[in-house]
Image 1 (tube, rainbow, N blue to C red):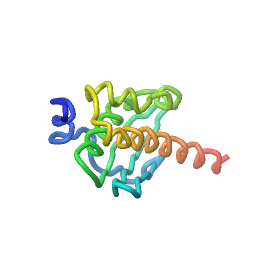
Image 2 (image 1 turned 90 degrees about the vertical axis):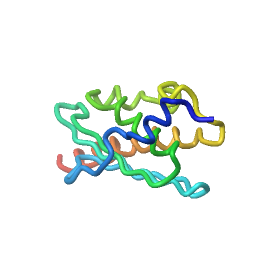
Image 3 (image 1 turned 135 degrees about the vertical axis):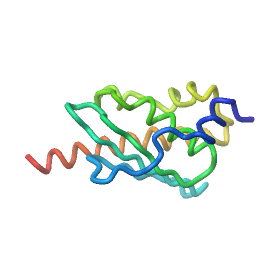
Image 4 (image 1 turned 120 degrees about the vertical axis):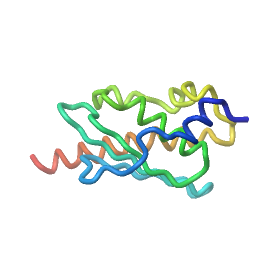
Length: 125
């Protein structure tokens, strides 16, 4: 049902935790399954210098959060915005159909964090 890669990201999540004074925070959730995801980013020179997540949900939600942080870290904001839920699924070597919404949450969480960062930047100017 779950790939070895998904199980590895669930058992050994990368970039888990919170960034205090994050430059951008994205919070997304799925009311149907109860998954809630926070993505925190630190931005330096238009790049994601650091990224962390806090996820409350199933193993697939934790694994997709872990993968999206790995895919986005070090990328420019524009590059990070192009990361799709399919990219996450590909890294995990597939997701069961009932868990595909988790990869969508990860994509939406990253975009929400970037949008939050950009809104804060606009407010400063």
